[in-house]
Image (tube, rainbow, N blue to C red; front, side, top):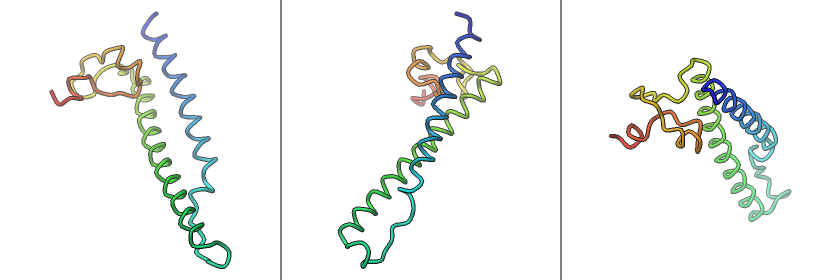
Length: 114
């Protein structure tokens, strides 16, 4: 399979994942809203539980945001014809490494500080 065909497959997979992440972000907006502090409507333990759930939702959103950034960067490298090349040293990234995570931007040597 030609490199451009592989790049197109990766681009399609990354675009699908980006859409999934955006849908997840949209669907969890409510769970990230501030917790109501009115004890008359919510008991103290329920409020603490709601605050923990909110914190977990916000952490998940931060992780989604980071993944979205990595996906956008990988899509940019595909568009620029630089996908699969280490952004640090310019050497090719091992295909198996890219198969595990196509958003990887460095070869194993540069990633390990070598």
